[in-house]
Length: 240
Ligand code: GLP
Image (tube, rainbow, N blue to C red):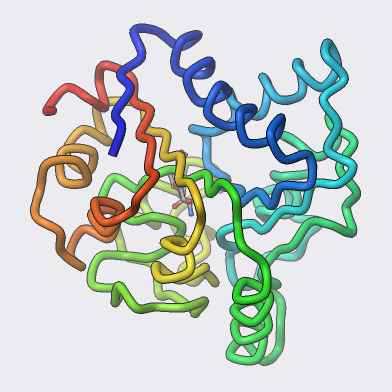
């Protein structure tokens, strides 16, 4: 595992961008695993900037997003489809038909997760971008999730609902369930790029890099990944 500690916001975005663009330049038809949350926004801004300045094209790129809330329509500005359109897709030339999401409005959730798992088994992700929850979750794989897990429905933990409530009117209106890619599927990506910033991520980053590998801290599974890069700011890396 390679850990890069950024001295400031600019370097944080640059380090992540370097890892991402390296894959895209070497493989213009790469499959990207994409993430939501506040952390990767600075990377998406750089990708848009680069697309405009250097004409990097995404016309042959495909993408798979990690997760989606249950019960939010894609027109809801907190749905992850909306987030991706707003923060990345509308600024680059990706073909929306080449972007894949779990459908949080699906009537038959098990069938929907099986559909996504089948697609993931047929498509090898070249780079999987990840954030991390303050409790060590990746995507929405909460502590206790099996390392063998595939796409599934999750009951979100109190701490995650609380963390995410900052994007909603109140805790009461924050979704309590989500669909997520599983840990075994994340591990199949050729390269993993995990980004984390801020003090509230320091314990999770310590556990991921130096702690014991345990299902109680889902991100620790990445200790077993052959090509994982962790980009942190000084606060998130403060316990390393
Ligand atoms: C949610 C997402 C995760 C993300 C996490 C951290 O739980 N499902 O994929 O990593 O939030 O979000 P943030 O980057 O806003 O701290």
